[in-house]
Amino acid sequence: MASLPLLRLSLNPSPQALKKPYVSSPLLAVRLSRPLRSTVRVPRPRPQLPASKTICMSYQPVPATERLISSVAYFLPFFNGLQYGRYLFAKYPDLGLLFQPIFPLLSFYRSIPYAGFVAFFALYLGVVRNPNLSRYVRFNSMQAVVLDVLLVLPLLFQRIFNPSKGLGFKLVVMGYNGLFVFIVACFLYSLGFCILGRTPYLPFVADAADRQL
Image (tube, rainbow, N blue to C red):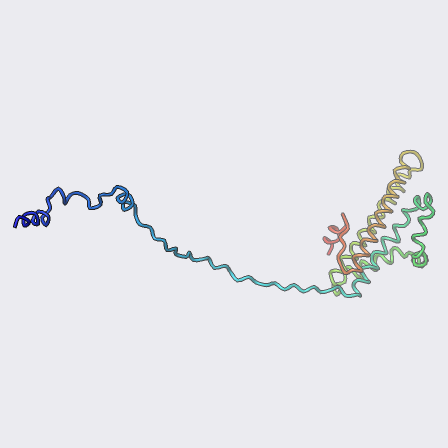
C-alpha cells in the first residue's frame, strides 16, 4: 500500500514539471527549432519558344542573253580608253602583244564613222531606257555609259591646257598611264562578273549608274 502514494505522485506531475520543455537535449532542441524544408523539387515551367520558320531561298541564274548584252556593253569604254595607253605602248612595245587578239575587233570598230557616238546613243537609248529589259542588263549598260563619259574629261583637260613639256607633261603621262590601267582593270573585272552572272560594282561609277535607273 506504500506504493500508492508514489503512483499518485507520478500520475499527477507538478506545475513546474509541466512548464519545462519536453525535449531536454540541447542538440535536439536546436534541430527542432529550425523549420523543416521540403526536399521535393517542383519543376519550373519553361517558356515556350515560337516555332522556327524555315526560309527557302531559290537562286535564279542570269540568262545567257543578258550576260552577253552586259558583257558587250563594257567594250565601249574599253575601246575608247585604249588611247590612254599610248605612252605605255611606246615605252613597253611588248605590252601590245597582250592586246593582239582584239585588234581585228578594234579595227572594225574604228572603221565605222562616228562609231563612238553611235554606240553611245544606241547603248543609252536602246538598252538603258528600255523598260522591257531586266535591271541587270540596264545597270551594267549604264555603268558602261558613265565610265565612257568619264573618259572624255581627261581629253578636255589636255586640249584646254595642252602641256607639251615640263612638269605638266609629266603629270599628263602619269595620268594617262594610271587611267589606262584603271580602264583595263574595270573591263576585266566587269567582263568576268558578267560571264559568271554576277553584278559588278565599279568604284565611283556604280552609285552614279544606280541613280540614273
